[in-house]
Image 1 (cartoon, rainbow, N blue to C red):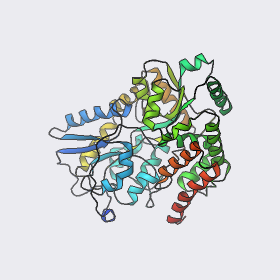
Image 2: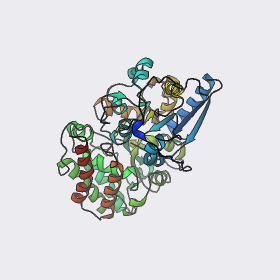
Image 3: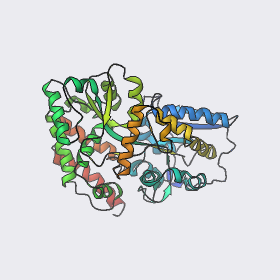
Image 4: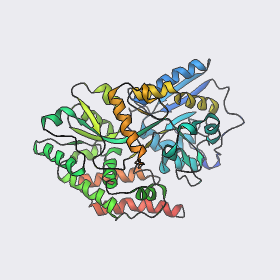
Length: 433
């Protein structure tokens, strides 16, 4: 899934033939003697992951005398849009954070652009720390479908979507934390009557489609998720789950819960608007938690799971991948190993992240304990439903356009669903399913 990051300078892209590459671990020349580790990620400096990985870089350099980590900050959108070209060029990094799912890491693994990490995972015992559904987004089959096959990525944190809220504004309006969808909508009605738009929404990027997915999941079962995400059965885009999601999303726009102006708002601006107290709520991921803890100064805030849902957008976090063209694969594996160590994992947890190999007793902040407890609740009940843009290549852009059409009122819910059904079903045909 994914996320909000600061803009950076453009990357020079070089074309080459991706299909001639082979993705396999244990290369004869694994770069063990390399003196530079070129690392890319798109985590904000004040985010939990940004803080933890900065410390990991320090520890890596201390344990590898004479080796420099050349960290280059990129934006999520920059990497998402250009990954295939970048990794097929001499500009490829040695290790990179990348979005997980069929449409992203799965596609690159199928194209031969990523290194098979299976041997390293087994040797270093990462599979003992990354267990259950957290492995789903790390493994891909020959068709690039997640959930089985070889390890092409290593996550070291988890994430999920929730509702962040301004406690002060809730108290002013006498609103309690809602526990059902009806109560949630009643709370938003109260804000609208007070002349306040309830939700800060970024319709130009991922956030709006995650609201649509939350609404669809309110009517869904695990079987629907497995069919939609893992292709274990046919998906009816005119069925009750997605129809409810699209129709209720459109109703939220009509009722004033979501501003019509939000179609052009990016995720970063959405989050900052919530931080500035301009909106009482924002529905987004745990990747904001550390930033909000650091940057919100003028009001008290909290979070709660999307009311009434048993299924939520979420998964293991974005994954470390080692490009097939990495010149320092051995060093890349060593860096991943450091990010999995207890002190880095606990730092991540105490900075507002969800560690997957940390010690819960070492998480001291009450808010961070709440964050991790809520994730444990989701994970223990098999409630991770992944993200709506994962199933097919290019699906992210289709969903962005689809929810923008709902916000602008340029398509009906049925037309929007027809629009997102076509690329999904076209991908099924390409896979022979």
